[in-house]
Length: 99
Image (cartoon, rainbow, N blue to C red; front, side):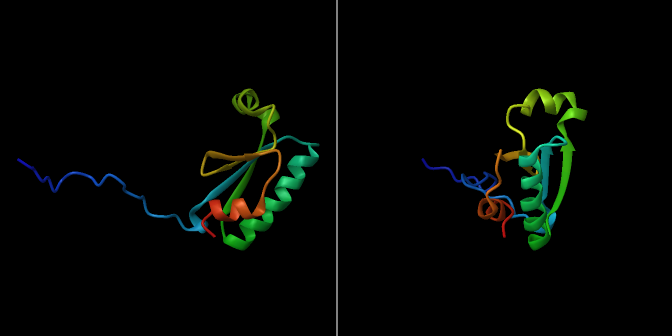
């Protein structure tokens, strides 16, 4: 006997895709870090193109961030999830933002 339950969720469901304007890019770095400055330049450009928001967090001011990321800075998060570290690939960041 086969049962059919209309209330079951589909096996593969997709959440609605966010608009780039609804995305947040976070740069975790520290003052005096040339890789962080390079990453910021790329992030500023891509966010300006796509309409995404961005923020910078200083690893020297946050013990939890320092403990988690000190060997990887700069670290780039997209909507709170780690996206990249050390270098930012502009094409990859655009794709992550849905642009």
